[in-house]
Image (tube, rainbow, N blue to C red; front, side, top):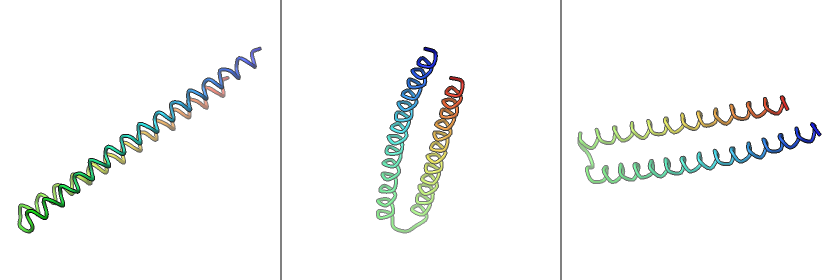
Length: 102
């Protein structure tokens, strides 16, 4: 009876883990898609600005600022991805620990 209860609890934990993993993956993918779209929009705006202004200090300065912003955005996005991955790893460690106790 205790073994069956243990197996039932383990199955519930695994189902919950799978649900959480799928939910986290969906959130990461949605966030990545939004960030990617925003970055692409910024690139298009940068292209339009370059075409409008052509040469000159003003255009050069704006391009540099947009480039720095885009790099910063990409760095931030990569950091979020790393942090999200660490959360998943920690959750998996906890799940393994719970299973080892059961």
